[in-house]
Amino acid sequence: MGCTYSVYGVGRKKKLSIPEVVVFAPCMRIPAQCDLQRALKGLIPRDVINKLSCLRNRIALVADDTGGSAITELRQALEEYLSILIGLTKKEHGLENLVEFKWKNLVDGRQETSVANAWFELLSVVHMMALLTLCEADTIMIPKDYSGSGFRVVSTDCKRDAVDLLLKAAGYLEFCVRNVLCCVPPEIKKSMSKDLQDGVLEAISIQALGQGTEIQLGLAIESQKATLSVKRRLACELLICYSQAYQCISGCDLSHGYGKKHMWFIKWKFLEAKAAAYYYHGLVLDKGSEPTCQISAVCCFLAAQELLVESKKACISFCLATPVTRAPPLWGAMKHLHQKIPEVASRKSQMYGYLLEQEKALQSLPEIPDFQLSLRPDDYELPAIDPAWDSGNWEKQGQQPLKDHLNDSEDEIETE
Image (cartoon, rainbow, N blue to C red; front, side, top):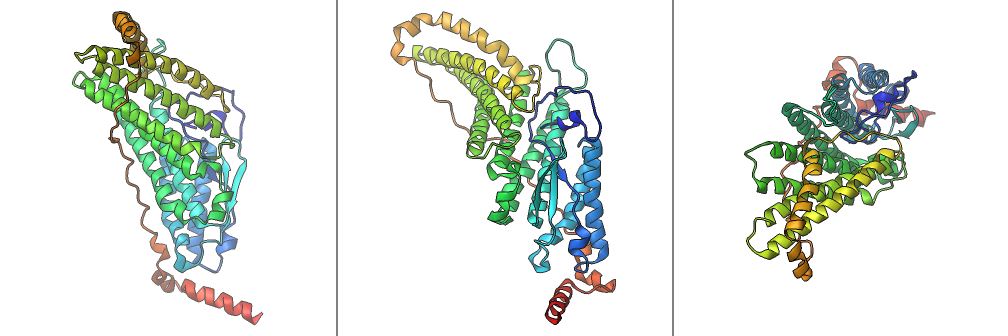
């Protein structure tokens, strides 16, 4: 969840501290020890097996030793591992279900899953890349030093970098859902970690777009060039993101470790987004010349104020859900809205109170406009397959092609 795993530490005791979370992600899973040599010996060249084994062990070791904080090194190792791992997923090689891949929870080291399927391994690797990217975005949005005023100060460049990382993470997760999960047999899916459910992956991908949109809304608020229409559109897009994320996760099994906390995060951000959407829609309506426009605007402001109160309660529930975390100081768009919404709601309701009394029948919330999302996940493609899988190279090294190995194995069984 963000970088929370780095707080607990692995293999050594550390002073307990409650981590702060800006960008939410489930706890990272890392590779656990598995016997690649025994499963693949005699089927593919030894150097291919060694490369697979060494890269996998390196990822596990670095993640364990650093708590997942060595993001650049881990990302590079994961990309290298993917290029050689892809060969195990090729049907023509017949190796898809030979290796039992094991993964464990980074926080407590508990082994969660052990699955004999190469597509599961590929899914787990890309998922880990997504969580590392979310962790990097979280780190950027939590500066090591900021003013003691209780408000978060993050540079514009850091915010833009965080948006880029969020889109990258969303792309990884979208790739998992569209291109990898469909290759995993249904019976295998049942034994996988609950964090790898379709709905959970989609929810994290969409909420990453939502957090990117929230950062953009904050930048628009700070810009003198951004119009009210632009701000309203971003606020409405923010609401759409969290509405979709809620729909994705609501049908999932949330009985696993971070499931309930994840749901509370989405509820919290959904309520904040809805408050923002009503506030900016109210500002647009308030510019109308008809009394009905002012009535609708005041209804929007009052609704935004109530939603903001509910969002604070949801934030507390999120923080208290296991594992306990801290909410970040107010920053960006939400810092602005927590200041402006109560002020505007109070002022406008006093200003147009007489209209509300006269036109009680018109006191209903107007519909929030619908927009297409501006942000899209980055496109992700797997790296090219490692040249070591070229059977021509095997023959040059005196290694039999894979099909011959399989035929030899069948002959030996028949002879026995």
